[in-house]
Image (cartoon, rainbow, N blue to C red):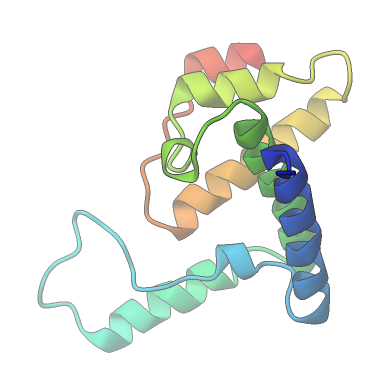
Length: 140
């Protein structure tokens, strides 16, 4: 008997939350090497380390907890829709709109905007281009 993919996702999300509770709430927002298309090839490692430090400390711990939950909700939405991880992050505007609209009349607008902010933060941390635009603003 096979386990439904959504059930596996929920189990894994719970494990991630337990790990974050034991360690830090923002493990998925950990900054690695700076990703920037305009990064000069001769920039010093010290300058790059300072950028990483600034980005890593750009949000308070409570914000990172909320963003962790928002990103979990986005990944769960992608799983329910049959979208693979490599297709959902980085996210295109259509997917962002679909996620924002997925719980209309179920959650407050501020909650939806917070979840979108979490996905945007992931893009910032990972140096990916944010594709949220006018359609997303109207959807929210």
